[in-house]
Length: 152
Image (cartoon, rainbow, N blue to C red; front, side, top):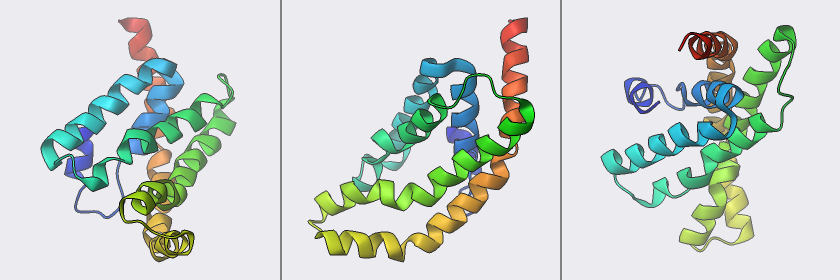
């Protein structure tokens, strides 16, 4: 997850994290929290445990949670649509999910927090679109992980 994020860093808000988180959660359920937090810690270690990092302690877990509450067994035709949409939803909500920490750290009023979310909405839309397209890889990734699980 970390390496994929670094390789795609030149593309703003376009990465494979949502794909990995949804696929790992579908296959490994609660155990998917391990690679999520390995990613979060690596990000902090290599880029600094600065103010931007603190929302990462919960923001990826929100995507994990949304995936966990989906039905465990979904027909592939439905899953091929639902999984990218969940990833896209997380992308569009990213700024709003990030906002509470920003508000606390910078002592924003409620109105300032809403403005901060609105100003970042363009980036959140790009994030959602990127997550949706990369999300098309979620179902194939799940199939590969399931085959590997059976084999090993």
